[in-house]
Image (tube, rainbow, N blue to C red; front, side, top):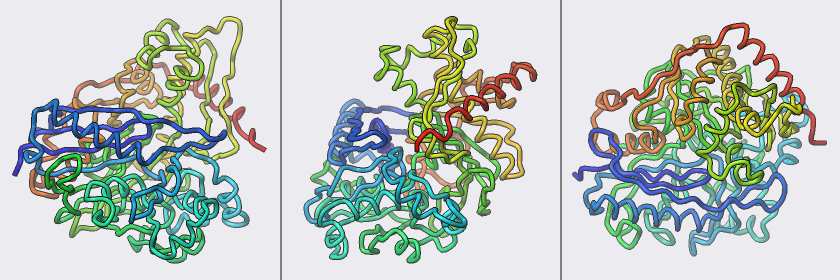
Length: 503
């Protein structure tokens, strides 16, 4: 067995390939961004071919950087942006359309139609753990079937495959046209609105509701399989036959990479959006406060584990918006020193409801607002308000999590690119009133995929992974209760201003 595990981490804005050694240390990695395609307001797409090309490039670049032959890899794991919907021809590998990204809101009409009447957006929640929302794959797939010429007939003939991005990558890695394996696993399948949490399979009644032919759907295998899903093609980017042995949706992968294996443990990932997950063990906890019930992972021969999740659409993406759309900063790294020029937000509050508000509100009619502006406000206040918006949105989810689970979160593990922002992390601890802890390995999404693959092939044994998690930095609350309440009250007022905007 080789001495390394590879992790292909395909995210909303970029694709990375990282190598980890037996101690869980990252030894090499490459990352490339891909285009964000906005054909109309509210629409967001990715080119599946570009995603695959970037994946091939980062794999080759990482192996070259590390000077590690592919045969030294014991296995490869995959983690991916969830809900993003790809449909392709298995004969040619040609996508029928661009991938519809999880942030895309074009399906609001479909969602409104399905949610009409009682019980509204909770129509499929008992079966799926999810509210009806543009976020999930089912409405996106229905839209593609209704708006792509020739696709319905192709789907009925078995000439169109559906998958979230993990399925697209696994199919390509294992050989593509004529050879690729069409598969997924429960952490991704549970984000489609087509998968039953109780049955752990595709639900015929849900397929009928969304008009989806069963022949389009991938096989659902364990997140941590007892044997590899397949092997990389020798004429592919690795140039060798490597086991593909673990797949997790990005947020479940981060939960796994943060070693949150026990019921009651939680993490928050700060990326394009923010995603707070709380491990509920084998209990499927129904949310009554705007959260999602989702599969955390399923290991071969064991019952699935579940999580409560609070999904926030726009956090790191807001920093990118300030950079790309307003030109307020030249690089994302400039946001912290700019925000630090202001002692506080100067009364400015920024609600980044660019594609509506996700958890715990689920309001697709909301749109972004900046409130509290005065002649005193400057760009430093705007930068600080943008960072604070991430912390306030996380607080809303944190509070909902405590209500749904009945268990207070005592420590919050954090990961993702924004955790390098110490101003944000301190403000987050101040709002939550609990310690915020960052691990030494911040790429916990990729690490979680590596852990899953390594566990599957015996690279790591059960019980070894907890010892590989190590703390790097801890932030403790320092804000007075009166100041916290004042700030939270103003944030709630700002959120109210963002609602009922889309007619």
